[in-house]
Length: 118
Image 1 (cartoon, helix red, strand yellow):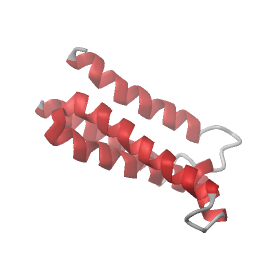
Image 2 (cartoon, one colour):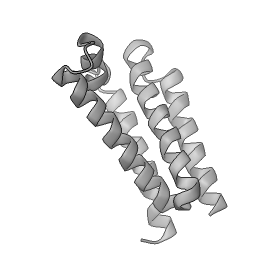
Image 3 (tube, rainbow, N blue to C red):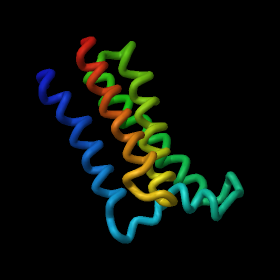
């Protein structure tokens, strides 16, 4: 995969997330909502929510490593996971145009900065 294709993948993912936050029926992340409702760590809903977040972080880290290499990609993937998770939580309460949009813009800036350093 060439560098241009790598750059478009994170941007595409962030655009899909932004579209999801703008759905009229958006009520937040279903996994976050479930983990709030079921506070027992061994509850199946909590286990699935944890598994989802682990897989999200793993996918983002893999994508970031493709973009920025292993040394810079790992922290970038973790940063993206926090920003995306925060955007979902925030948009559920304040809508997609407030801090959630700022978080996704920050994610785009991080991706662009890592790409420029590669």
